[in-house]
Image (cartoon, rainbow, N blue to C red; front, side):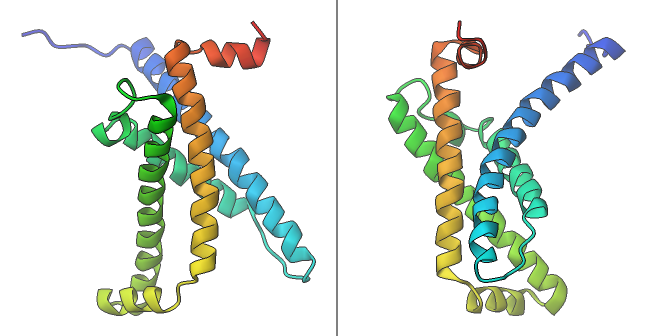
Length: 173
């Protein structure tokens, strides 16, 4: 039996690869959510309501990127990649990832309510009673559009050959 020895250069190379993968996905979602939350801030300014979008943008981008990176490693994230048309794969992933994001956001709200209430049942009731359907639908639409854009780009890049689409976008060749 052989054991793999990790050298410093191997570890640094692996770390750079992971940071690049997660960093680019996070940067994409940071841009998408930044645009949406800037529009929200501009619309609320008309009613003289202060809104600070930076922290929500950063947290949203980190959560969305983590969801993408984790689900892309599962069967749920790769189910239709090679066997179905790209549009169907993008649609499927957008729905699945949006549902996962909604679940994560809901659990976050329950967690905060639980910390305040101290009881899970009371926290669930609090979150359920004070939900805003319009806000939830708006968030799901925005996150879904961001996921759709990401999956369309990633699917095209994968089918053209890893890195080909990025080179076309960045250099024109």
